[in-house]
Amino acid sequence: MRLGGTVCYGHISEFEAKLTASGFRAITAPFTCETPREEIDRYLEIARKHDVRIAEVGVWRNPFDRENGRANLEYAARQLKLADELEIPCCVNIVGTEGSAGWDAADPGNFTDGMYEKIVSSIREIIDGVHPRSAFYCIEPMPWMIPDGPDEYLRLIRDVDRKQFAVHMDFVNMINCPRRFLAAESFIEECFRKLGPWIKSTHMKDSRMDPRQLTTILNECAPGEGSLDFVKVLRILDRYLDADAPVLLEHMSTFEEYRKAYAYVAARAGEAHVQI
Image (cartoon, rainbow, N blue to C red; front, side, top):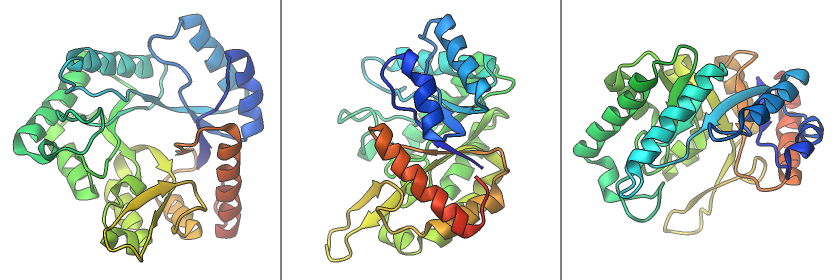
């Protein structure tokens, strides 16, 4: 697998030095469809020079926002088109919400039949409007939003019924209850066993829960700061992903935090005899 993450840098002039210092072999796209083309070309040149794969183009906008939903839907299509032009395999978003608490918020309406129909329709509209040939539109699972488990993702794949719809794997986001947390490695195995053929990119992080607190609170955290056994997790990924598959660390805010997480995972990979 190609282990990587997001490169934290200031100006594009710092990007190459930070990329090489990171050790990453896969990264999130450091550009969008709104980035000047000459700047995009420079990023691509640097990535090719160092044999680093740009694994995914992010959307991260809510198609069902009450004020900006249509613009966000159009932006998702533009991001998918860019990914397709650049042969980046994964364009990723969450499904979105009609709730007012935030673009990725938990809301009672997230799981209604009516919302499910809108989700399927919006994904089809994005893909059908672009007709991608090499890129796939993918949905990142969320704890409180469809798809919140592997079976729900399989249903979404079936109902969207588009060849260029695939899976963005985030197993920690689907560890959303004590039962899954307490049998985490078994659950992660289930996720990859069921969704493996469709996975285009994977996020890697850790999960923790305070067993002394009666009201359950599950928090994501950097690898090594939670309860997951990364020797077992990496062996699972190695069984289901090919050698060139991107696995990305995420949700850290500094270069040093990413380097620490990378070093931890790399050390566990060595213990697991998994090539990264």
